[in-house]
Length: 325
Ligand code: AMP
Image 1 (cartoon, helix red, strand yellow):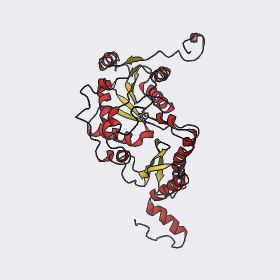
Image 2 (cartoon, rainbow, N blue to C red):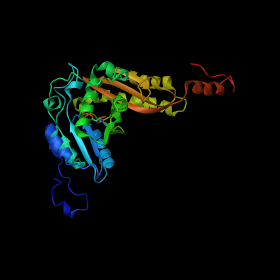
Image 3 (cartoon, rainbow, N blue to C red):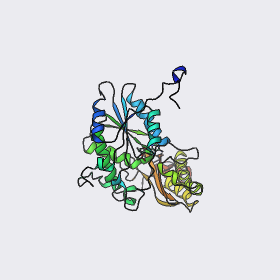
Image 4 (cartoon, rainbow, N blue to C red):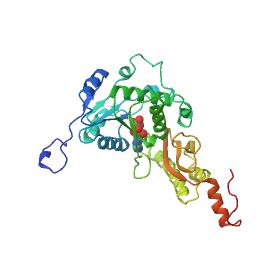
């Protein structure tokens, strides 16, 4: 459609299709043609079935690349990160539409390999250990998940050699562990986070949302509602971790059809216990058969400070020792 006589219009020039590499050899040839001296190569790793969340990543990547840099998109449904009872076979695959979005957003190169291309030796024996942070939350509910994610991310970084790689804050634990891998393994890449894209009803966009029936979706909306409730509690000023969590839990209880895997307030750098200051309210839940994860940033008050303020305002007056746990 956009290939019409657009030279006549005032809009941007028609997007040219990105080069599609299906093999490592095709990727290597196309990658060698990108000159890093003119601008950075920016990688956007995805599993395809692209939606507005990915669109945000592509736009951020385009901006980071600048007019003479290049955006490289990988589209690969990574078998290594799926458990035996998960949806590997029915995960949506929409390559034509994905390529159209990549073209619209100015990507230069799309790498869409088969599993045999990515894992030429079969199931890999040498993989990335995600460490203790990889056993928490998503790692607890999806054993092996982060080992699979970090292994494929490391391979994609080696194959595409980007200066910058962009990741969504929607998958906050993944972002944290990718950053930790970059630090611990001395990877020469800058990781750029991109904020979560949401539909108008508040649900974070996800390739799996297409599995939701209208009734499931109504149930699913309790998840972002609960995160907003926690955020509102923190914004009131005295919200410590316990208060934020209680507000989110109350909102979740109002929708018993939503099966909650976890809800927690965590330190964004480690996913360990949160300290006063910037933290994340994270949650995962199932609506119908569809699993959803989401998170929002919260600014936590110190527990002692919050209680001290309340107590000062009530009976004990100023000067009371509020420092306790
Ligand atoms: P996926 O294709 O689901 O593996 O996601 C690929 C990348 O897109 C990851 O970095 C995700 O965090 C990011 N992403 C997925 N959904 C969203 C969203 N709603 N908003 C922002 N980023 C997202």
